[in-house]
Image 1 (cartoon, rainbow, N blue to C red):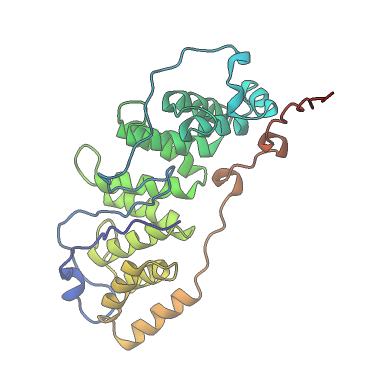
Image 2 (cartoon, rainbow, N blue to C red):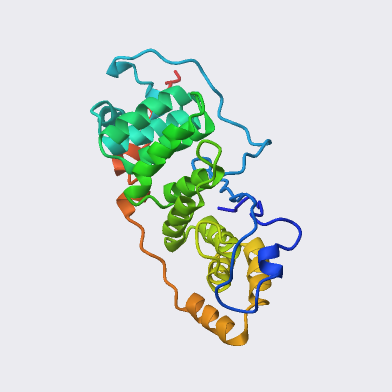
Length: 293
């Protein structure tokens, strides 16, 4: 999906890049905050709050219902039955349909209930979605501590985008103080799994020495990997950093990019696989044919 461009570097040349020696590891970094770039996926988040973004329509909390009262419009009977039996994948899908307004009016309170049911059954993607709900305040008060808790559950189980979002929350600050060391840790885990925005952010951290030892060759590598995925901002930063490296270091950095391979994703932690019968539309009742006399 396309990424909304938000540069994590200042408009003017970064002193850490402009004043860096021509190669290798360099010294301290200037004091400024990191602004990570968000993804525009509705169920993926970043650190920049887009004032133009529209939150899902919020509705009042829905009272507990008997299983038979789950709206038939929300999905096939097989899906509804499995969800009511607390199947974690079916419960996740019901939560996603409530959140997105597929077959029913959007209701993030109801969505949260079903994601919680899915998580109780072991769904890692549900933990990620709950982190998103608490980070953005969909149908509940924003709660960064709860967001971090749910993102951590998903990230530690191998969910790549949760790793990125957890890094974002650490970079934004805990109790008002950015924790770049933990941000770098989670950005690296996500970057190694080919999350483009985390690769970009690692490039920033290595250029500035935030949470890691400042290293322009490493900065070049991560900017280049993000650029290889079509990130124009990363390509510009890659070239800026590359211009400060000596020929030998630049050659080695380029080779590191060429030989890099991503850590494979854990499919169960990152994807939802629905049973075919859960995706089928309800069969329409046969139409009676009128008989003309």
